[in-house]
Image (cartoon, rainbow, N blue to C red; front, side, top):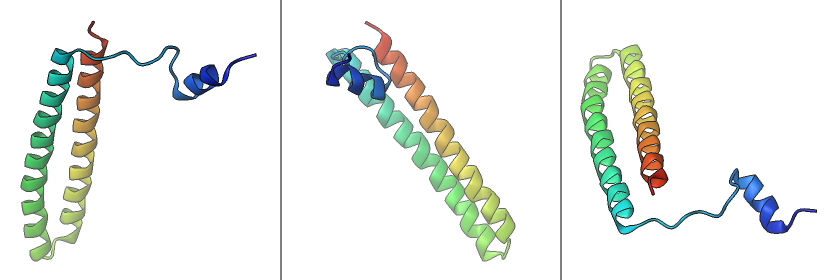
Length: 92
């Protein structure tokens, strides 16, 4: 019979408790967060300008495509960030 702790860990998809991060790892994770926040903000600014221009010109299909592109780029950058952060966490 499994303990409540083991059941909870299974639900989280983990087999062991989380490991503590070292100071350099925490620093690197913070740097990655800052870098990717800046990347996402830069893309949002650039595409929002294009969306505004397209909407003002009455090109609503183009504006919708640009909004979808923005959403896709946000997701891609977030996935890239998550992968890089996981790499930092795995380094011991």
